[in-house]
Image (spheres, rainbow, N blue to C red):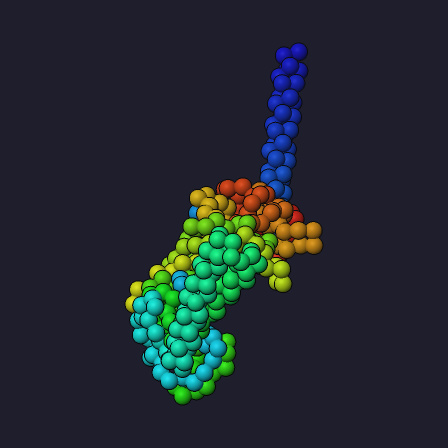
Length: 352
């Protein structure tokens, strides 16, 4: 009986050890299978460039073509025309009321004196007829005729005054003679341009903003101007004004940017590009434009989650250069695929 008990104990011990060995072997095989699967995923993974999404400061600027003009800028005309006797040199600083040319000014001066005398006579006649009507010597119709003659004489005097000023190219404000359209001894017809006067210490960049964008800008915002021939040089300014009316022909709104011009570096008539600040973002999700997928149903980006590529729809905001703001759809600290997004699809294993 004791011998049988010892045999039974030995049998159970051998059986237990055998089963334990099989369990360890099974677990080892499973681990090897898992490692093999991971090796297969790594072999199929596509290598990409990916970075964590972060918040950045961003400035949204509008870009437009522009032409410079003086902060005060006027092209004078010849009025009634005539022969040019004298003309001031371009580039001269002038004072308001100064004569810049002579287009038969003596003739127009004589016409002005004649008109002034005629008005004085008409005024005297009007006063006499007023007195006669008060005394009952004449009827009111005579007074009305004298009043009409006097007003006609006033109109003639104003026209003669304007013709005399035009014959002298009289400066309407302090500034600089920036252009001349006539030559000495030339006979110019009525209404022809003669000279251009501008205030050049401060210039205006005149901009046409599309109707759809006009509401994005506010007067006083920062602005910049670059001359077409020297785009590397930047002239700082401010948005001075925006018209409240829309140009019906091309559906644009005219805006004016005031630009200081020390040393008269800039010239009226120059053309170039201007930037107007639309909005500043202190913290925005800014990503490379090259990482955006433009699909038929919208825009998206690829991110890495659990080692696999995932496509996320996004809504884009303003862009500048190679960067674009993501308004919604992407969160900070997401791992964004910046290079290789076009080589992967939903669920593709990736390495970065």
